[in-house]
Length: 197
Image (cartoon, rainbow, N blue to C red; front, side, top):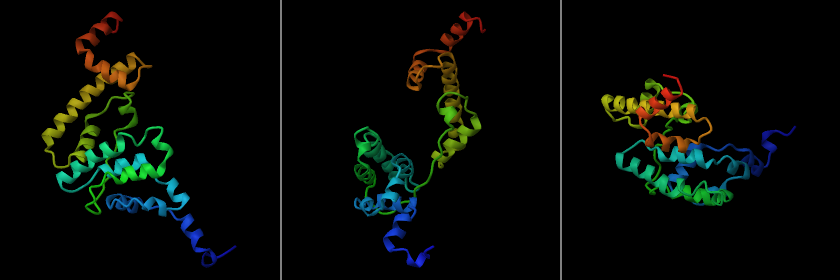
């Protein structure tokens, strides 16, 4: 067995892990050549979906935070996951670099997602979990606003869960459309007609 001292330098680099915060710093600096410097193993660990999530959430001034969110949507979310762009990881990297305004390294934070079963309308959200979620997204918002937003979200999401249960084979986008078209009275009448009320 060879010691670590005898391992050629190229092999050490090949086995190196990739540091997420180093990748984000390269995005912030708009380092388009960073991707080329990575080994094949490191390139495999660049996950565009995860990077868009991290890149869009900046802890800093309101203007820079807004810029990163809008820029992520404009330069990455719009085309990054099209079947043609996904075939070209270097192009995806370049699109991710376009997110940054080029102002240097920023502090990126992870914003958690809402539970999968809640976002797919399989389970009803709780007021507590939605308040925690919005508190992380809007840390400067007052408690009353967070409570009001959370209350409205839970109310809407509950309706969508009901529709998902009534129509289990319907797509999520169709459930959202249907939710906008019908009223609570329509749902009650439907339940009455089925003998559930």
